[in-house]
Each structure stands twice: as C-alpha cells, then as structure tokens.
Image (tube, rainbow, N blue to C red):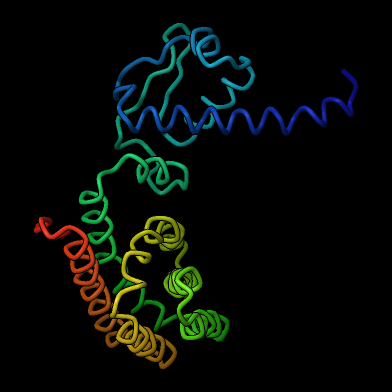
Length: 250
C-alpha cells in the first residue's frame, strides 16, 4: 500500500471505529453488557461484528477515554461502574438519551437546570462583557424573528441559554452548556409549539436585560422563574398528549 492509499484508508478506519463505538456504547447503556462485566474477547467481537482488529481497538480505546471501559492485559476489557463514566461527554449523553425513559430523562434534566441555570445567570450578570452581551442579544433577536418556524425558534433558544453559560467566563460551566445543547433540544421542541411562546419571549428579554445591566440577584430570580415555568409547560404538554400521566418531573 503506497502513501496515497494509506491517506485514503485512514478516514475509513476512523469512520468505522466511530460506528463501532456507537454500537458498543449503546449496548452498554442498554444493559447488554453489565457494569463490571467483561466484554467478549477482541477476536470474538471482530468475528461477530465483521470488523478489523484495528477498528475494534480504536473503538475500545475511545470508550476507555470516556471512562466506560478499562482494559488490562491477560484480563480483558471490562465495563466500568457508571460513576466513572464521563457523563458530560457528548456521545455518552447521546447514548443515555437514546435508552432513557422520558420521565427519568425529564426529571434529571430539570434537576440539573434548577441547580445550575440561576447560578449561571447570576455569574453572567457579574462577568459578561460586550461580546457576551452581543451573543445573548443576537440569540434573543433570533427567537423573536423565528415566527412560526419551530426549528429556528428551538435553535435560537438553545443559543440563548448556551450564551449565558459561556458568559460566566467559568470553564467549569461550559460543558453544561454543551450538554444542554443536546439534552434540552427535545424538551424545547415539546413546548415551542405551545401557547406559552409570548410569555417565553418576555421572560427571555427580562433575563437578557438583567444580565446586560449587571444585576446578578435579579438575573438569578428571573432564571429560576423561567425554569419553573418551563417545568410547568412540559408537564402541561405531556398531560395534553397523555392525560394519564400525572407524575411531575421534579
């Protein structure tokens, strides 16, 4: 194989090992491989899935980096306990969302929103600069101009919340913004077509104004109210779709 062939071959290897990582990640989250359980041997996995050892090793290496697997010579590759996984990793989150039941998903996301969003808004009001203000304002303007376009509204809403996390200038908040860009997308879709949109616009504007004006406690209060109303909106939408659902995501 010459160098040009190698250059052409590398993207194929990368694409395959990412696909394998997806398969194995989903399998672990589904419970096909339990925590503490050894995976089948590399040779068995390759034979079963019809892939090369190079691709399989790259896939396993990726899951090791995410904290999901550990490999030891003469022992094999074992699934680590979930507390060791990188739950802020985009792929891990995506796999979790694919297998989680809706009630559990909503409960955990709202718990995280209540815990982090008001604090992020208050910190952003303290530390946001002109570029942050412009980013938040641009996202809000996009929400206003989205009209009846559901996709544009949701994307603008996500950008608004992400901009607030970035405006904290605290890199430990930034992964939460990345997490929410994935985890909250479906939640925002649930309520974007509801009757609450005019109220949501007013809430987002008030929060934007508080951050731009540098009022941390007001920003915290407004953010908490926004999350509380969003919780009620999701409950209302879900009950309308399935009246038998009475359990609230708290």
